[in-house]
Image (cartoon, rainbow, N blue to C red; front, top):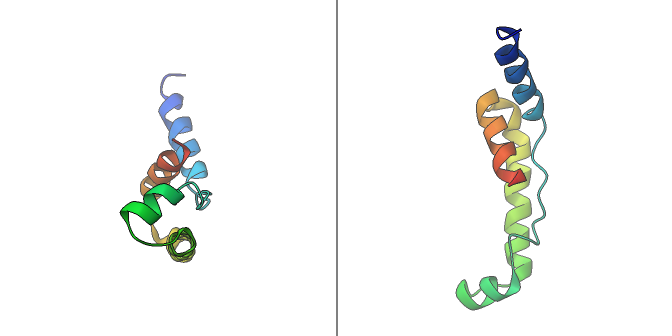
Length: 77
């Protein structure tokens, strides 16, 4: 059983990393920080976040499985 555990775990990581992470752009663009510190509107920040997600989605399958799994873990924190 101990031999199968790492194999099963690695399979789960690959499956988790097969989908593009889902994130809420509005959480990454709080009004206070965006407007006061970065001198840009929340709307501009959200457009940038959505464009970044689109770019990530287009190239997602080209990333290594471990990198995709790592990205999924970071988004879920």
